[in-house]
Each structure stands twice: as C-alpha cells, then as structure tokens.
Image (cartoon, rainbow, N blue to C red; front, side, top):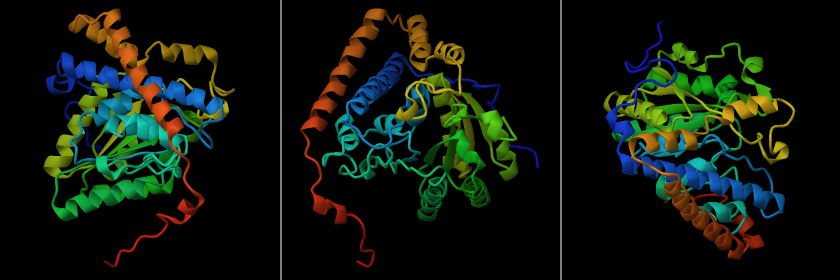
Amino acid sequence: MPQKKSSEQNGASGSIDAAARGDAALRRDLLREMLLIRRFEERCAEAYAIGKIGGFCHLYIGQEGVGVGAISSLREDDYVIASYREHGQALARGISPRAVMAELFGRVDGCSKGKGGSMHLFDRNVNFLGGHGIVGGHLPIATGVGFAIKYRGGDQVCVCFFGEAAVNNGAFHEALNMAALWKLPVIYLIENNRYGMGTALERASAINDIAERACSYDMPSEVVDGQDVLAVRAATMRALQRARSESIPTLLEVRTYRFMGHSMSDAVSGTYRSKEELEEHMKRDPIVVLRMTMEQEDGWTDADTSKLDEEVKAVVQDAWDFADASPEPPLEALYEDVFVDTTS
C-alpha cells in the first residue's frame, strides 16, 4: 500500500508556515530554551566528571532543536514521553531546572525524588511521562496513552521521542501497527542522530531512510531537518493537526546529530566517528542556525545573544546550588512508591 505523506512534505524539512515560524518573540523564546539546555548539559558534564552525578548520563548537546521545536508546539494538556536522553525534553516541557538537576544529583527535591536519576525524569504536573532506560520499551506505553486519550474522547496528543536504533526492536513495529489500526493520536518522533551507541545507522538497518518504515502501517511520515528548530516545529504542527482532527498517528524522522558521545563513558566521540565528521556536523549547530535567522529577520545582535546567555547561565547555576543543598533520600525511601493501591 502506498505511503501516506503530508501535503507539505518536500525533501528534508518541508515548508515552514507562518504559524510555525512565529514572530520575533517566539524565536527569542526558542533560542532561550535551546541555550538553557546547552548550558545545563555542559554543567551536567562538569558535575559528572567530579562525581556529583552518578550512574549513566546521556547529554542532549547538538540535538536541542528537536526537543524544543517539537515541544514548543504542544498544548499544556498534551503528553510527552521520551527515552533515556531526555534532559532537554524535560526542560523544554517545563520541569524546572532545579528539579531536573536535583534528580541528577540524586536528591529528594528531584522530580523523581532522587530515585530515578538521569534516565528516569518524570513529572505528571506537566504530563511528562519519562525518561525510560529500555531502548524502545516506552513506545507501547505511548500507544497506550494514545488509546486512553481516544477512549476518553479527548483531543490531546502524545509525542513519543526515541532514537533511530529503537526502530529495529519489535516493540516499535507492534506499537505503530496498533496506533495505525486503531487510529490513535500519537506522534512517533525518531531523533535520528546516526549512531546507536557506536553503531552507525547503515550498519544496523536495512533501510536507511527510516521514515519509509511508515509504509508498513499506512501511516503518514515526514523527514525533517533536526538542526532547524523552526522546521521541527512546523512538521510537528502538521502532525498535531492530523492527530487532533482525525486521530491519525504520524512518524517523524528528525535528522540530527549529537555533538558529545553516546554517554559520559565516551564523552566526546569514541573511536566510531572521525574528528572531521564531527566538525562538519557542528557547522550546523541548531543554536547558530536559529541565531542567523534572527539576525536576518529580527535585527538580533551578538550583544543580544550574550545577554540571553548570561541569563540562562544564572538559571543553571541556581539549579546547581539548589541541587547541591538538597538532602539525599533516607534509606526508608527505598520502600516508598513501589506499589500503588488501585482498589480505592
């Protein structure tokens, strides 16, 4: 059966309509969110190096345009669910930098009470449903959220973030098949940064254009330039319209690139990619791409960027100080939040 495509799809990014492009105020907000994530993650790398963050830690540096672009188009009552590289999405969705940093430090004031850590950020107050450490394990959960929305008669949408390596798991196929069959309002957003840990996409997938997998489910799909936050926002808005008005799911392949290693265990690049490749991709830093647009359209200056950067650095420092002052959970907290009584 031929693959459904949105009418706006055209190459790697599609058109950017006026609503998605917004005005100068919106572009400033998007730049601020991306700068906040960048500076936050840089401090996370520092905190990990000196032992304030333990366990696993996967940074979002280079991919900020994806999370910010997609989440900026959502309503407050929509849902977001993510994989383990989710600091950026958590911040973009509205979890406070204090609560995220405290969680990374393993402190009681963290959004998961200090017991989830880097891979398990969660906040029901902003409909952020995790942070999941099992690759692809949260895709069926997102499908279940979509079913719940439709069952209740709502028009919310669930956006599910995951990496390109997850598409080779059975959970991916089962989740998308059911979503298409039952017409569920879910946006499956692949953050294709080319590497599943240290394995390049072309070494692990028989299909390199991952969006083509939507053909199997008669599902609309689109390939998006993930380094252009406005392009991501535009594509997400098109998918949201389909989900709200017709309850049709969408597969978005958002092509991006992480500037750091897979995790802090290969903090820069490891041995699986060359310095030249990394430098080439860094020429399209999503923050720089947006800033150049703002310089052309809004008269944005280097001084404006510097001022905004100092503001977000102060926010991040405040988050660090707050997390550092927060106490560790007591031992008895190990037995809390393990079971829930569903009979009442």
